[in-house]
Image (cartoon, rainbow over all chains, first blue to last red; front, side, top):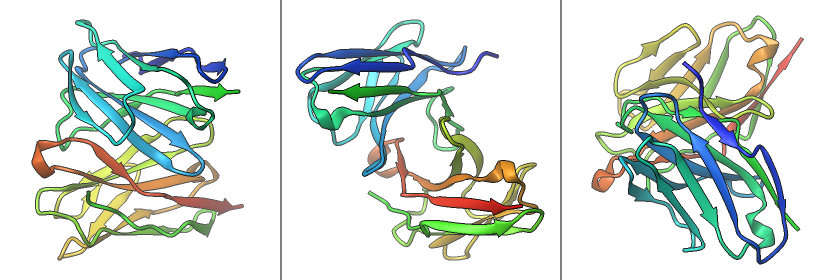
Amino acid sequence: KAGVTQTPRYLIKTRGQQVTLSCSPISGHRSVSWYQQTPGQGLQFLFEYFSETQRNKGNFPGRFSGRQFSNSRSEMNVSTLELGDSALYLCASSPSGGLQETQYFGPGTRLLVL
Amino acid sequence: DAKTTQPNSMESNEEEPVHLPCNHSTISGTDYIHWYRQLPSQGPEYVIHGLTSNVNNRMASLAIAEDRKSSTLILHRATLRDAAVYYCILRDSASGTYKYIFGTGTRLKVLA
């Protein structure tokens, strides 16, 4: 099976712009989670989608949003970008997001906000 | 949220066993303990997970304390390819959530 893919891999934006990142999960996986990784805060959970519905949400402002399509592909959007949004954004998928399930991570999208 | 505490860094010689500790004193009865590792420039990858009993797989062993307030990831023979940041994670089951709570991780350095 192909792994989790994320596009684009690298992105440079300026403050105030918005950005959309894409994640294609492993075939058959219906749960997609998003994480932000920064040197200062480490890995932080953003949100999880399952069957096109946001099931869980971390402690991030409303500028961070996401959605999931019927084929389980997911996008996350960050509006009004701030310098502090520069980070590696990771997507992970699993069959249904159960407590015992392994999450499979993509390589991430590295976002730089200037 | 449940939290985990890990040493910031550890060193090991190649071909020797490595014991990576993790404290999770606030763990609840149904929280699973997961370990992931992150190699440079890659996303995290699964290593092992458990609930109460010790677990073994081809990559590592997981020893869980009887009171579940701590656990230890054991790499039986460290190789240079095992150099990574190792995360001990609780799978938060409170209120029906299913998110991962990542700690700060332990950066493992393997010496040739």
